[in-house]
Image 1 (cartoon, rainbow, N blue to C red):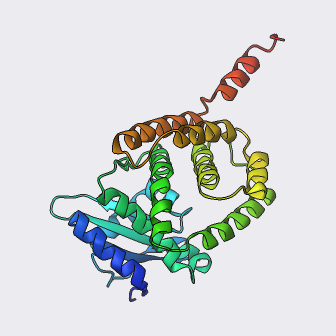
Image 2: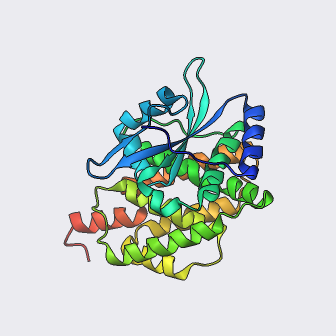
Image 3: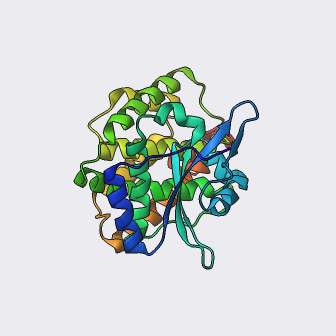
Length: 272
């Protein structure tokens, strides 16, 4: 089996060279194939630097989150083998095919942010992995959107398409179980991005509010905070990352004010 070809546009090739020069690290791109019948992710044997990519596919917390993404960027750090790894999710190829530049440009943005020296959470293969991923996304996406606009790379067309599909899915699906804190963190991150990066999206907001209303307070708090702080300033960026991480952790582990009031009333049924 041979690796699927991912052709980089001229804009991406130019940006790739900039990132590699700035960081001193290679920026590697691979498509992770998907076998639907066996529900397995795999990398072709001839994938460049396959040994760096493949380790992540053996981490259950990583693959749980990757399954929800079109692509992911990993800053791989082992002695003598540092690199930026971008993995395209073959399970979602039907959705992203024809929009490769938009998806890859977004991931290049994550590598670019790291190359500029901005902080990012360290991935750990634990139940809290999703919190770090979404907290890093929320703060970094502010910078990435500005950079993509400056480079005149269209990412909103694909984004709006996926929002419409997500809203339709939420209208039809049952809410995730209370134990699924990662789904709450993911939806909160999506809503923050929408409010900060797009004109109002009433259909998506309406569907999200109906599907998982308890995320809204957290989203309001994060959006208000980010609008008052400069994500380009590294110090403010670091503080924002801490703030967002704590807010998502509270949401995921159901420690929001709304939840605390609910628990108090439930445990003290005679309170009126």
